[in-house]
Amino acid sequence: MPTHQASPTLLTAFAREHWSVENRLHWVRDVTFGEDLSQARTRNAPQVMASLRNLAITILRLTGVTNIAQAIRHNARRPERPLETIMKVAC
Image 1 (cartoon, one colour):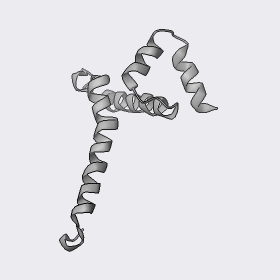
Image 2 (cartoon, rainbow, N blue to C red):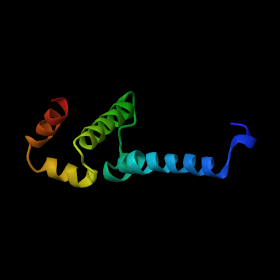
Image 3 (cartoon, rainbow, N blue to C red):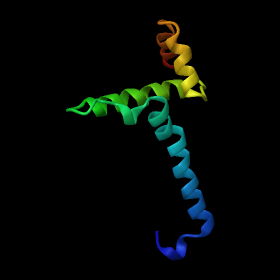
Image 4 (cartoon, rainbow, N blue to C red):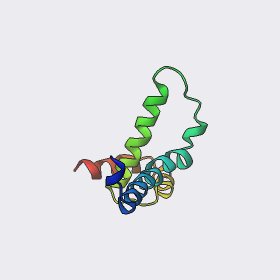
């Protein structure tokens, strides 16, 4: 974008949008899923694990979850809950 078109309001909106993505996805992946501590480093494993984390976040968000960590703990307590959650999204 040319500098004469980049108003302070527009730049602020771009910055907020960037941090919205950072807070809703990357922070959840880094902190809740411990992605930075992952030891999957060879071949396709890092990409596959990132895709699975993104899928889990998406499924939980589609069911209305706002606290991913709490939802993961809730689903981990009973083995049937993750499948029930997936079925809510599929129907």
